[in-house]
Image (cartoon, rainbow, N blue to C red; front, side):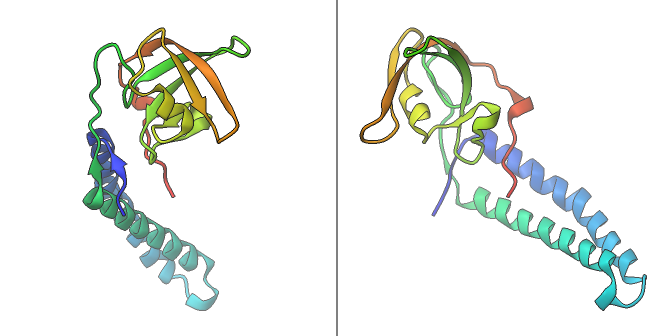
Length: 167
């Protein structure tokens, strides 16, 4: 099994791996050593907590390395006038006239609470490759769907909301 990621996703994961190896790992090891000096390990909460943090960090490093190693690279380029990965899209919901802006991202970065919509979600699928002014029908399931109109497309990258979801 592989995940579909952009080159930007891979770069961010590699940065996190490096940070975890060079900053978090040495601190976690030092915390374990220091907690070990506090006496009986069976009743030493600090030791248990330090080991847990160390193990979680190592697990995250392995997870990210596996993601990078097995990823299928998704091209993040799109035509200047069409919606692609990493684009912010302002849409108008035709049923009530409200407008929302979403950034289309890969599934590993999707977070609807932050306006990051996966390219595999119904809305993400409907918006990809559409142009400003186009209508898109979002099919939620077999019986429910709705229409949106693309109001604008912003091609600039937004690194502030561009985080890899931590598990």
